[in-house]
Image 1 (tube, rainbow, N blue to C red):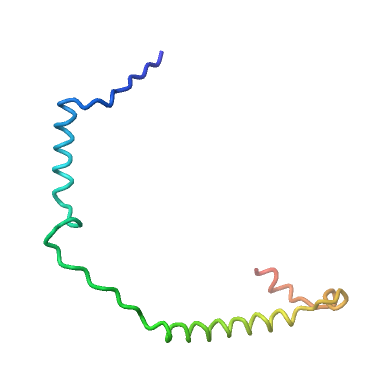
Image 2: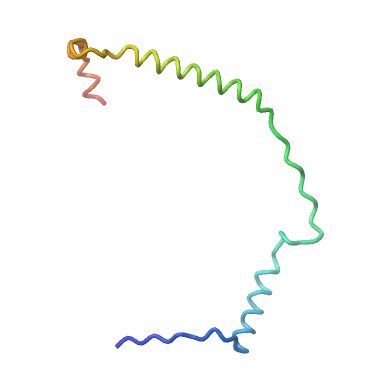
Length: 93
């Protein structure tokens, strides 16, 4: 049948030697922890006023367009069923 062997977590000499080799290879290129690295620059805030004004104007325009579209939709049952549809546009959709 099928047999599975579990290795123990006890460190062996061969295991320790291979671990040291791996650590030496992977830690050689670490630039993140370098002591002589140049200091990082401080982050500077962008002018949020210019961006927020433009965004708020666009948002207001969208709200106005949506509101006018909603107001054009008939709400009474008789008006709703009397509304004529352009079926060629519906069929393209």
